[in-house]
Image 1 (cartoon, rainbow, N blue to C red):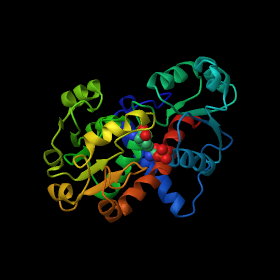
Image 2: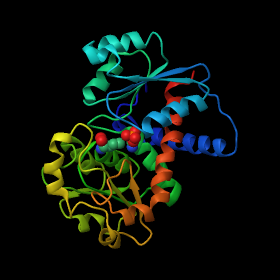
Image 3: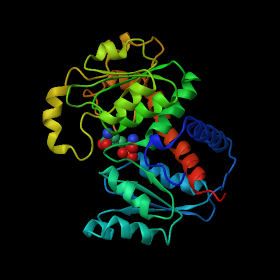
Length: 303
Ligand code: CP
Ligand code: NVA
């Protein structure tokens, strides 16, 4: 495997290998054991959208692995002035050992990977957020100790995070239920794949989707790039597609709450639920660091 562009690219075995490595790297970091597995390597990080967690966790992760990361804002690159991604890919491959990209279209990330001779990692597109969901799976395993048969429920917009979560949850043997309004469902191809390969349901009813859940997950109603639709979406989602006390009551009493962040309090999640589960949510944010280090080691370490 050269790149990580979407979770469909990974088998259950690949995911477990990444999670196991991430657990080990987390343990080593907590115990002051250094692990310069990518000494002398460089990662270019192309950002066409804002980021707090992805940017900082990749940069710090590369540093902790003994390598170096360059922040490349797309608006400052020639790509922002129309240089084709194919040429950017071939140029950057001459300097770097790996490229992370956060962009709009999945096709841009796929084209970059097709033309780059070095590994390309998807740091979020409109279609997928694979690094996020690897961190989510790491967090679920850390707290719940197992995946098989557990119910993972996503409430909200059928966006990039929902798409990747469905794939990751089903691949790990979880039962996945999604509640979202008609017209805002996850990717049709992903839903079809999920229904064929596991226990998957998508419905409009939040309480039905949350019933018996071990993990409740939500994300913003409007993603980056959807600013123009935000008001309309707010009217459709408000008061219904929200993680609140009532929804938590439908889930298992020991259900955990996850949010990829950034969160909009009192929109997709109440302040009360967010703060009651902040321990889980920020562990999830921390795990981005460990899991992405594991991904970089898998893709970039000398074999
Ligand atoms: N969850 C996530 O990707 O956060 P950032 O947008 O801050 O990177
Ligand atoms: N769905 C959100 C996730 C942000 C990390 C977005 O794409 O903006």
